[in-house]
Length: 286
Image (cartoon, rainbow, N blue to C red; front, top):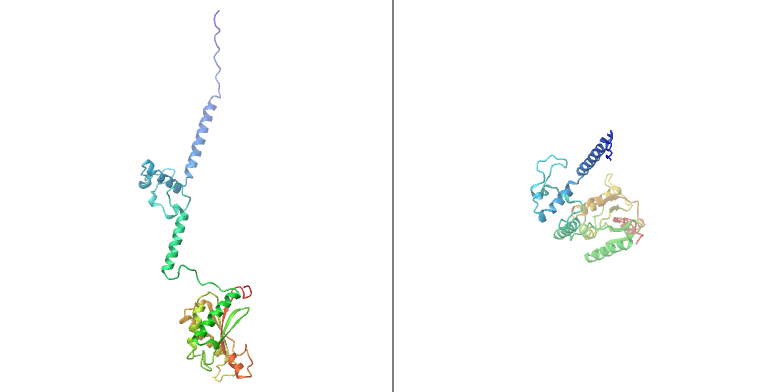
């Protein structure tokens, strides 16, 4: 019996869709690859390549990659051409510089430089904020003034403003009725100034007089008190190195007495210059 001849398969008009689908898939994969390459961090890539130099004898990190190329990854550059910001990211391979260690070494070097300059790497003078700190300043000044023989010429008050150093003017700071320093005036300011340099608080220089009027053709107690305060301020700045941004001078004339102007003793007490060390956060929190 003769075998039955197989019928020929019918031609499928949609067979091209299989090839088309493969081509579309490959194109999509190709463009995804291009996009991925275009997003490569060039600095990290060069760091990675430099790590392959030793084990594989790869000179790329020295000679450059794709020299003069115009490919999609951009023109290559050698590791030596990277700026300092190239290593700001996380190191990819062992043996690359550790940023934290470099920062620690740099800080140590700065401290050493500070010590060499004579300031031992310390910060700026601290601010006095508490009553206990103000008391320490007062004790330091009392000791220095006593050693210099001026202990009886100065009074101290700690209040809400800070520490007030009241210095008698007559026969101590100034000649009578004058803003010119007397024989002891510069010396007593010189005893106080070193302690004032140890902290950063503002300092108010305030001049005061008694009620006895001056007869200087319009030059009155307002002028005298202001000129005396300004003279002390300029002496602190020009001869003792106090920062001028910390200082202010004010004259109150006869209008803020400490004692009764009816007696010679009271008037002598009222003739004074006060240096107020202003407390940063008030003097009652210590």
